[in-house]
Length: 233
Image 1 (cartoon, helix red, strand yellow):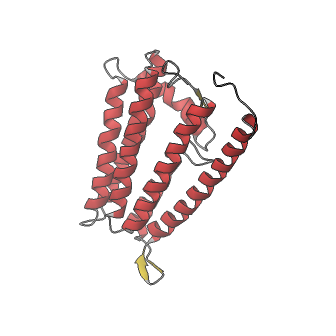
Image 2: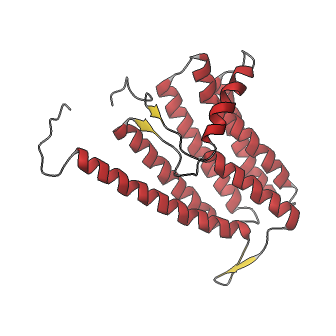
Image 3: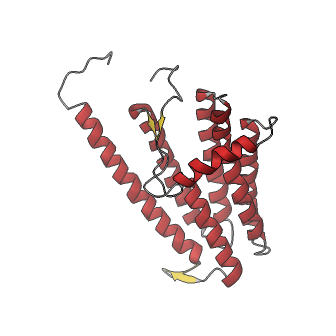
């Protein structure tokens, strides 16, 4: 992939809510006023991600901050999902600029939210950091796939960024209504967030390794060991 092709790739969407987003997001993008630009939505997503992390930290003082977190999650979905959609609807794409900015800001959002959760009273910091690390490795794998296969597929199985947001809102609401539901994990005080976090980290690792093995098998078939290859191909 040369510098002219960077950012130009086939997008594939296989996760659960992909169909819903493909129907709704273009309609929302067309309804936005002309002065709203993709970069404005990217900035909105960054502010919302910061608000999610800060809200989780503030929940040490009151669980009511989780309502703020839920609102910020919705705003983050709006900004993060619509920036690229708006550019495509208006035909003002900047493939290399958008690819670079979008995924750099996604990394920041992941760190902000994961740290916020880890510093909240609902999740152990070690679990929050584990989720962040695995998520970033999964993201790196997607970027590598984009380069070698010329195809962008961010979702792993049924799970994509929007599905994660829905689960976060459900967990926050559960904590607000019935409390964090305490557990004991290896003698350590934990909550339903920790149980979900461990399950998520395990599932993410399984999905990542499965996709890594599948990619490696495909690449091995495309480039068999011991066979001479044209360096220009």
